[in-house]
Image (cartoon, rainbow, N blue to C red):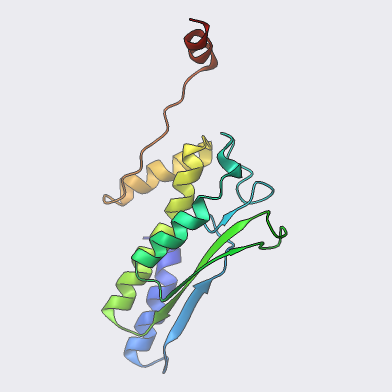
Length: 160
């Protein structure tokens, strides 16, 4: 997978082998592709009008919990001011076990592709490209891709 997964797996392996003598907590507050909903900053590039919905951080926090997060945070603010953003974060204890390695791999992949998928549904071309490429390399990833409709098709549908 991606470098994002290799780093915590290397920490976990160092703990397992004894090079690191204690567990390590990997955490993220909210500065990530799927950790924050703010139409003034992080979700400003979602152009279908849904950038004002605070769904992504909530979905991400729930998904991280199902994938084994040691703790999950869902909070408000995050540098844009109270009421202007919803943020989700997590913590994961790496203890050298295979279970910790599995959780890290599952959580970090979800953490990225939840947000990238959300942006692709908002018709962000770069996100659509990233999701399509990720589905080629990760066969278990199955994201519904957006269907684009031209303005003339929409206009003719509403004229009749």
